[in-house]
Image (cartoon, rainbow, N blue to C red; front, side):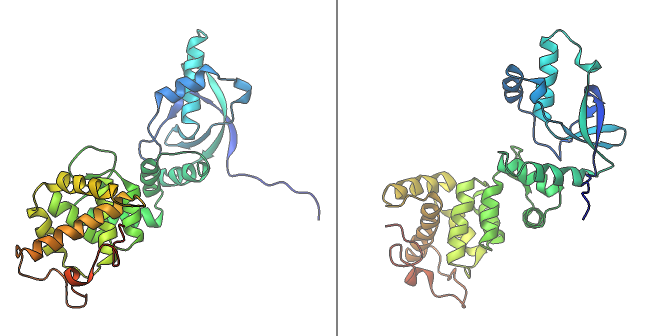
Length: 282
């Protein structure tokens, strides 16, 4: 067999820094502090080729966003106008925004990227699991994202865990209807609860929890106290246990006459014990 060459779909192109753009959906947010740190020790000869995509008359950055920003800062410190500078880049032609996000995710598998940022980029890249999670969240009238608003859930890792356990839908319902908040520990703790008691009536559980004193803050404080009594400290398990205990107390005190466990499940109050049963918090 004769020697042969392996060709990429990209090509080397000289691109003006002023022609480069950043996609908000297919990229993470710029960390100015990180760019300044890179600029302080920048060695042009050690700067790898940035990866770009030529789309719609502009060059969209796929990889090396912080290095390119550092280069602008470095040039400015050298007394040069970075808008007039060009650098040789690895350039793809005509990729969609989805394909840009997909390539970014692949190029950064070994690079630390915030899990929530990676999740949002994987949604743009139409990865099956993030897309499925997003569909469930949106069906509940909620959204996933780094936005401080009541309907937004910021912890994608907690959503992944609930989805892996197959209980994301009831978890979201309880968080929304009982508390109206979506902290990671509540999502993870509710996931541990529903994973163990998958036949509970979600509406009745939400009603019991919504009427319990203290709301999420009260439940969280009780979980912290429970955590101190556990040999193996696990906050989601502690939250899940306190959820169970809140339901147990409500039914035992007669606050709710109706069973919150459906017919196909054993009675939660009688058969779930914290030490030998579903939640081992010893």
